[in-house]
Image (cartoon, rainbow, N blue to C red; front, side):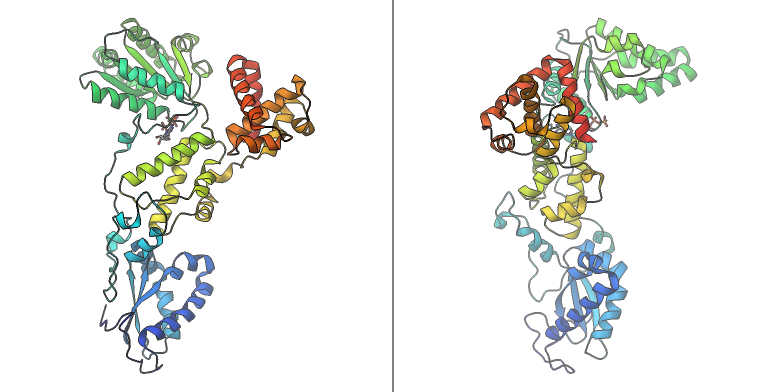
Length: 505
Ligand SMILES: Nc1ncnc2c1ncn2[C@@H]1O[C@H](COP(=O)(O)OP(=O)(O)OP(=O)(O)O)[C@@H](O)[C@H]1O
């Protein structure tokens, strides 16, 4: 870095040309350079990168500009250093201009997150020791510069799919209860209560998570139990390969590998649609295992009856045990999944991670977000904050996700819900707030209250106010009533699904 004589505290000798101490003249020059950089690079790029440099050292020959993280320092070094140097040379009052050095100053990054309340007091956090005044900032090593700080422990992707990490809400509690029962009963010698079991739900709802959780739980409790976990895609390709190339022995080996088990798990069963040969073989496998009292668990993205181009026999056999659905996660569940993600990240060494409540609400309020969507958005904002060394705020979350798929869905308001209900149930917005209690009006009003509770973060009293100033107990009653009616009356349930579809559009 050259001769570093003075620093922030000790730079006293006046500069030969400006008469100012080196540090002060460096600050004056840097101010001018920053104005030019905002023009040269554009204000946004400057704000994200070069604008985050700070002078940490200056003497008569070298000025050190430090970035809050290694990543930023490295990016500046590779992309903007020439521009910064050119503008520095233009403005520096010292002749010849002082040389610029770039560095990462980890203490700055720590400062930026230490202000956020975390799970521990600031004094307890395992933060790197702050840079002492007068000590040079960390130089950049090309390899380390592009990597975020490693976490304390590293989980394999599959390790995290446990029951403990699965957050339960109204939409998935049945599937969770069933999964736990399968895990505890497999291999006990008792005949399965329900067989086969199908768990279905759209993409990203947690089906595979539950299947892996079962597998892990059984493996931990009974390592000797025999499980086979196969995706329908692998089932099809292995079956086809056995038919084509491996003759009778290959086929026998394939069949044995599926039948000689205590538990057979088949993921993504919908993949079997349109493959008659494989469907036939799957059916034989299911029948054989059920007959011999071995548990079968199947996951699919839709109800077996809705797997087009699956044979009627296969569909009815799949539906003959227990079919349970993982429904869309509601606001509350999304919020709790988010909290679990934060807790897990902290537990893996990111003690400073903090997301303020308004930013969490913003993330969870995204209608239709599946747990997978939520996880993707969470990873994105955490990575951004780690790489850039910035705190996570509502504004940073909004900015980070503004172009992403995640925020494409509209936020739901009470108004939107009321309008959608009016459309499907053929009532008017005035009916939503009127005092009329005729069922033809009161029922759609209850549906709208119910959906407001399920799909928005509004409180019961708040919702009551928006429905003609009703009491929170009226809303609570509506939620219970509609929940019960949905379970009992398929045609009423279909009407509510129509409202939900409208809201998703
Ligand atoms: N209830 C939940 N609690 C915590 N994490 C969840 C929950 N549901 C889903 N996830 C997480 O969301 C992600 C997607 O889940 P998973 O892969 O199990 O979905 P899937 O239903 O199998 O999707 P696909 O049909 O596309 O395979 C996973 O990282 C999983 O851990």
